[in-house]
Length: 407
Image (cartoon, rainbow, N blue to C red; front, side):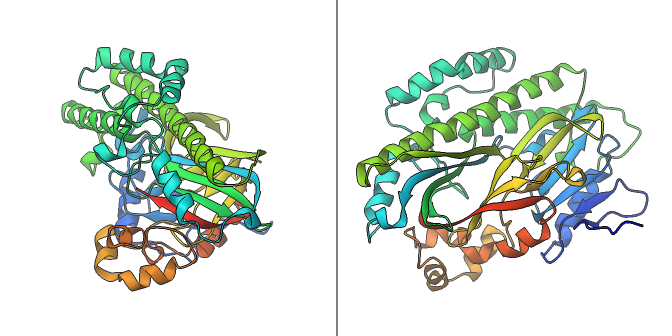
């Protein structure tokens, strides 16, 4: 009998759709486990649910989950930060090319890219380069077609927010790899327009759930769904696809602005061949085990054979450029980061400013009370997370941030 070398554990109860969790050596809260079992009870979910080691309680669906569905999609499982993901590029710069103080570089990046939520996190005047990128992408025309059928979806943030960071756990970092090469890495999504699309369709799904006559119980209103063949199903697939494309374009626009700021502050450099741009909150149609299905990754990255991905740690912790191993048991997926070990409220109540400053002493970043909820202690140990998914990805580069810009 062959030796089982898989890292996952069984997390489901008797008679339920299987749940395979890559959670050895990492915490899994009881609420997240219950949330996973709720989603696994839906008859269109399966053949199993895959759980990544950064798993934690989420809104709608568990963060760090990979949910395959047949004939239906759950909008709240995708969430409202549609297309959120990572981008990274390696430059020809080396650690010795960086100045002793990186404060000026951080300020230059913060001036180049609007950060935070609200009006101050938007372009006061849309840059010509952003207007050009938006005009050539077809995104504006596609969104207008969606709005024609769903007038409540707004258009006023599209130009203002393309090329902006947002807030929360979104960030821009300058990092060094194991050979001291300089990388730029950033994390953001589809901003306000994607949020509005997600919120709108989650509400429409709840309304549809109230009209359905089902032969089974839906344990949570956040698991409301659209059925394939319904007009709203097709409209949601179109809208979520738009938001995912906008998110990718947003990261590309931000990256260009960050690199422009760096060129004004640092010696001349070029970009090297290695670059990654990947979603970790999204849904798309895929084939696994010869079966076509929709795969929703909520806080998970596709890790097909030889596909490159990014697994960031928290502020002050190392991050990884990884290569997928194509493990079918996880639907070719891996974690999207370290994963929270405490809520934002708990972090603000338990982590002191002194602890935060000590944990980020080696990074040029904000060290004020407003970012305490993003301090390293709020997240799982990234080394334990990586060990738990050794059968899903291999590490290509290990990055340590030296500059971190938060929203």
